[in-house]
Amino acid sequence: MKIPVFVIHGFLEGGKTQFALETLADEYFSDGERNLVIACEEGIEEYDDDTLKRANATLVMLEDKSELNEKFLTECQKKYKPTQIVLEYNCMWGMDYLRDMYMPKGWFVAQVITVVDATTFDVYLKNMKSLFMEMAKDADLIIFNRCTEDTPAAMYKRNMRAVNPKAQVVFEKEDGSQLEFEEEMPFDINADVIEIADVDYGIWYIDAMDHPEKYKDKTLKFKAMVYIDKRLPKGYFVPGRMAMTCCEDDTAFIGFLCESSYTDRLKSKQWIEITVKASVEKREEYNDEEGVVLRALHIKNAEKPEEELVYF
Image 1 (cartoon, rainbow, N blue to C red):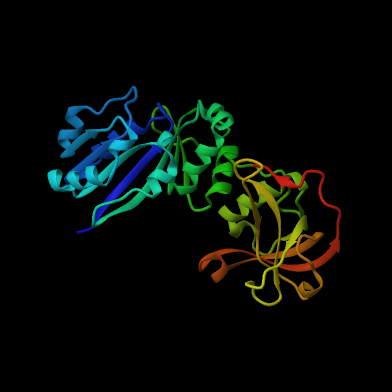
Image 2 (image 1 turned 60 degrees about the horizontal axis):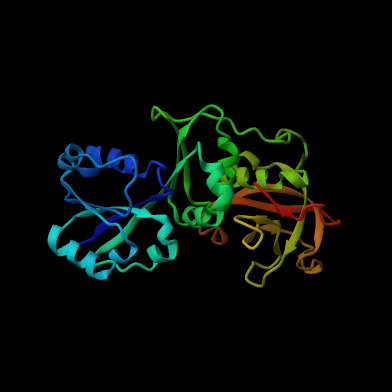
């Protein structure tokens, strides 16, 4: 029997328990299930007995990291015979501990949700950035709650998508409604040639990842570093930039596949100014999903930008 485990994590008082309660209260989620809730820390919000009873859920509270082990999970399986698990995880116990955690036969991680208090996000990002990015890397869904009209949602979304391109990122107001916001681009997307300034490369990259159709048949011009790898198809390279995803010791090269008849003349880490025509294709290099594919129209040597790293 397959038993899904739904992992909810985030910083203390970020809204994890409230989200877990709302999930359990959803009849679509809980109907016909024997739910086991494993809570690894106690915050301001508490699990109320009525919600647990209606959801046919048993709550087990843990106080110490050492309690979350193979013996405990095996005993839970025998004692409660759950059909699905909600694990409210204490991220201060470390993400590697969670990744390496033993699970009884049949248990599998069905979804990982990171819950973020938008009002304190900047403080945590400043002081605990590495830990937060570790959480975001594993998430299938990232929820920013307690948002207001002043929440810089577009910037937060770009940061999350840079760390984890596959994660869904949503923003909720205090009343539970979705925060609507428009992601304005710092360049003219309707220009004959869309010129991407050095400082705007990261913004364009994330937007093109999220909305590749916007750039279909568009001509673009930008400065980039050349990436060549023997695993790429013949005649292709990747013009891109190094982006800071966590700290200066945690960077990643970001860019799109580009076809050129001059690929053999290029060298890895060479800086170029490139003009390209964009298309949208389903490619093996994109895990058989659709993405932006570029075709070089003009390439010339260029000086590296004043700031080599891309920020979001």
